[in-house]
Image (cartoon, rainbow, N blue to C red; front, side, top):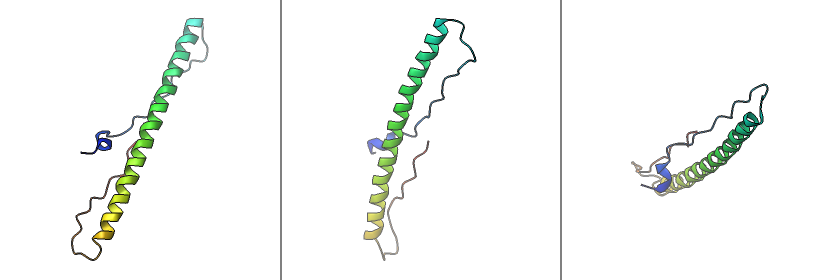
Length: 86
């Protein structure tokens, strides 16, 4: 099994809930902390998605090379990869 196949899909994070008003500095700090976590999670999602797409592109290129090598044969043993899921 290839290492890139171990990741099933990337989970897109949900943005933090922003209330209409903040009553204290603690609420502001807590919200800012959630925003920082969200930004970090978005960066991880972006990295995961990029790896998924690059992996798919490599696998699809290999599939096309395999199909070209088996052109004209009655049976192709080439594996067509599934596109990434998000």
